[in-house]
Amino acid sequence: MSTEAKTSDDLTNESRAMIDDMFARCTENAPNFAVTQDCFKTSLLKTIDKYLAAASAEQPASADVNQFLEQIQADDLFLALACANGNERAWWEFDQQHRSYLERVARHLAKTEVDAQEVIDTVYVELYGTRVVDGERVSKFSTYSGRGSLRGWLRTVIWHSLVDLHRASHDEVSLDELTENVGEGMAHASFAEAAPGGEDEMIDHIAKERYRKATVAAIESAFASLDDHEKLLLLFYHVENLKLREIARLVENEGSPLRGWFQRKSQTRNENPAGRIHESTIMRWLEKSYARVLQLFRAELAETGKLTREEIEICMSLATQDLAGNNLFRNLSTT
Image 1: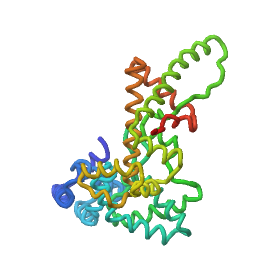
Image 2: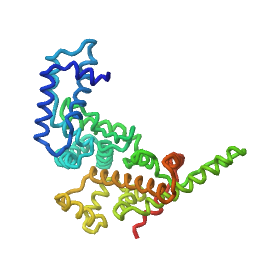
Image 3: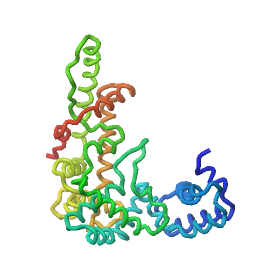
Image 4: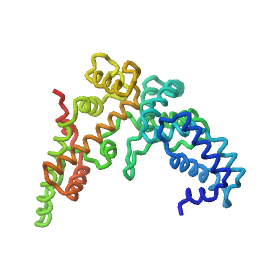
């Protein structure tokens, strides 16, 4: 039995009722966040286990649990869980409520404006999440427990990022992180390998070479098949090395080739196309582009290459062995 399950079993009816009431109030306040009751309850049970149950050999008393739950910043936790799940409405609310606070804190703590902007970019990437573990995107928001305000927690996140700044000279998602983003590491366009020696190695090399060629062709086709706005996003971010905030400012520019696409998307969602674009929005667009590359890559291997599922996995494995630099993006031209 898991720790969370045991903790849940040990909760009194009063504590369960408190959690249900907290969830109901949060859902009433933010009905569009799409946080499930199980997700909300699991987060609280983990927090109870970490800060109450783990502190003593005995189960925490009911009164202690109830007092602990009363101190939880439920609405902040609800927002954090929704953002961790990638909910669009939650991210919009986060930008509206906390963006200016992040900027003020970063400028107050950082030595220079450049450092402040670096930290803001880095924090947004961490909050949205660029790593994929067991098929799930890992967001920094998942570490927020509701103990203390969300803004207090954000201040700590910013401070830690500033401390680490000297070890991280930029905030862009690296190509290695790109491979984690799509979950399989398909973002490679050529593969360096030592010359084979011996008959067995030669046979193995010939077999791999067949899959290597299929992998390269599928990657090239996938990038070539992207829509223009997807190509531009990847070009801006990975070739021209623009930061998230710089891409956002480009989108706000009336002359930007991405502007028209964004206005159409905004109209379909009843959003204000003239409003400010935030880093989290660019991060979501990039993730959708990565997912589209992966989809096209797999489809090309299956439909054109006529590869089986097992063979496709071999190609996915080959794609993680080496990095080809700028060759990866040679089919991203929008002209």
